[in-house]
Length: 163
Image (cartoon, rainbow, N blue to C red; front, side, top):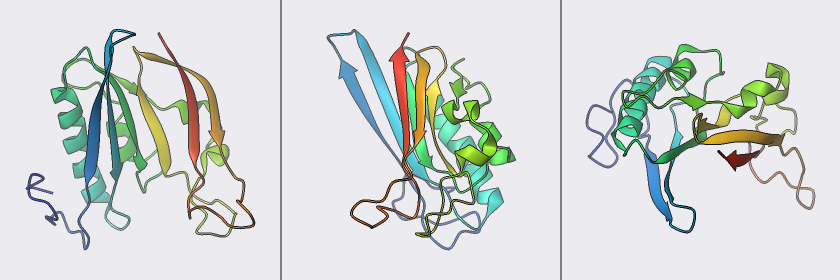
């Protein structure tokens, strides 16, 4: 929103508040810091998603440049949309994110299935710091647990190696 510091604030034409949460981890035995940010962008309003992507990118650039970055979320947009492309633009601090799922054909990136088991949209991913991580494996977990879907989205699993 225009006032992200105010919890629950709603602007940009959305009906629901949206948020981004992050955590910083000191991986002292390996000598680096890791920032993980998770978000859930608006499901109805592309302009709101675009403005949110810009705001999140600005916030990611505010973390110390030596921090390794991961950005996860339900982006409610296809990877080819302008709002998703924003995350692939270089950040102000020179960092660049990559989308490990981009190694898969778009059809295989689909995660949203609305509890049907039949995915029809690629709206979830895990972006990673292109200078800090190499993608080893990408999995969209399409399994049920005891006959039940754990979510209306298939989980995204990415195995990364630290460079």
